[in-house]
Length: 321
Image 1 (cartoon, one colour):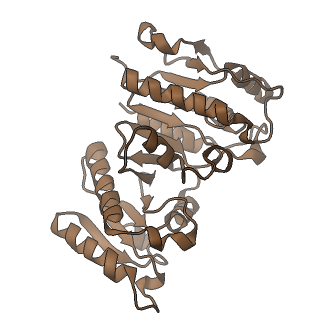
Image 2: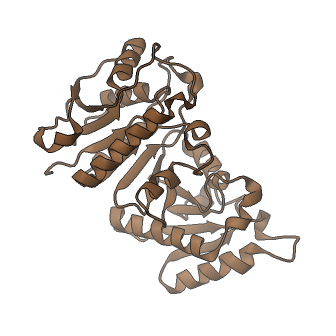
Image 3: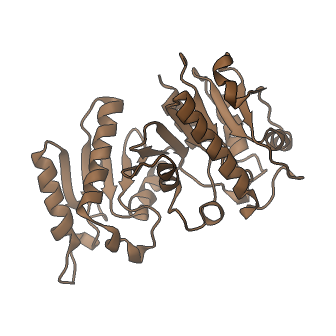
């Protein structure tokens, strides 16, 4: 392909995705064509319900190369899914449909060598069903990639958790030198590839103030040796750093990325600082996978009040070249 289409899976069919997707298209001018994988029937019902309009061009996924894909309309691959109402409660009833959408996307990515992929939000409770911790792990497994990590990206400051959606009591058990080193190296590689720069990285400790009342202190035994080793390799890196002060304005200005040991340690402050102005990027895949940094937001379905900023930033990030 001479063009670089952005492939998008709508995700959970009963979510705010249709709303924020159409709002995003109206707010930004897109250079590359978009291929959307979803149910056209449901997409149409939701557009009518929300009083939103966009041009749709239904395409055959087997013959994508034969189409002159337009960036002025949505090129839609239809996956059959019918429900009476435009929106209904999220449940496991949509699992088969969501899986079909992702399977179609993965086939297209492999066959057409797509390098830009966005997925809309899904329900971890119903779709992943405890088999995967999150979409990062689900997508990585479908491409047999073992070494990936999550980066929540904002131009001013990004964060990356070593463990993702684990219960807190399991975090320390799942920390090890290799996992932390792999995460740091993936972050450095991403910034080098995308921005031609060595990022300034801060690595947080797992214990309050990087201290412990127990004999075993993971900050001293695991994290500190990694930092020393990676400094010798030329990384611009500091740590272990106390998590309770690193996000203060004067402190966070010293870093491009802050790496935390668990999900809420870094995502809570980042979302407080930037709200919807951040995107979720999976590092380590053979393509760029991005998603809005929020869930299906069932309470806001059909109200036409949802903020599309995170999806806008996801599309703009992939559409820049």
